[in-house]
Amino acid sequence: MAGTALTAEELLAGSALTHEVTLPPGGPTGTVTIRPLTVRDVQLVAHAAGGDRELAAGLMIARAVVEPALTAEQAGRLPAGLARVLVDAINELSGIETPRDRLAELVQAPLAKACFVLAEEFGWTAEDVAGMTIGQILMYLEMTGRAAEVA
Image 1: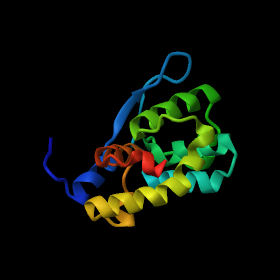
Image 2: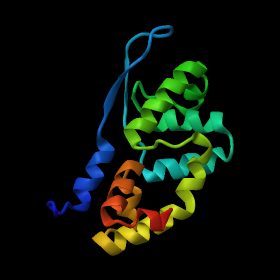
Image 3: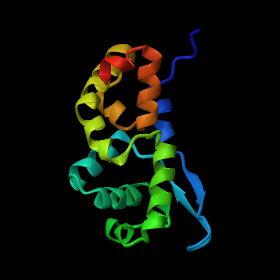
Image 4: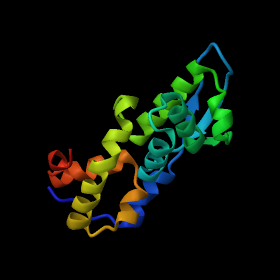
């Protein structure tokens, strides 16, 4: 069953989506606005954090929280429970459902393969793919039937 072919601009529009997250009881009350992480965001976080999970969480929060905007230093000072809630919401919105330990491993070499597969299948450039969320990349790889090839 073939659908309407999307343009690169339509695909990239998904990375501009925002979502309000209501904070759970037990801390500050209210909402924050987050956006999904793009492949580029995940690469930057993985590279900058190395193996430091706490630093990675702070960097993810700083990149994804739109309102209120937080610096990486501010995000790193959030209470651990609140940071966990935000990271989980960011992962869900970004289509990342993997343990944080494997984030860098899953992004590096497979990303290069994913760029190649998507360029071959859809004619997209590496820059087009880098602006997509992980969830978008996985969805299009699955659509091509070549997701196992990349992993």
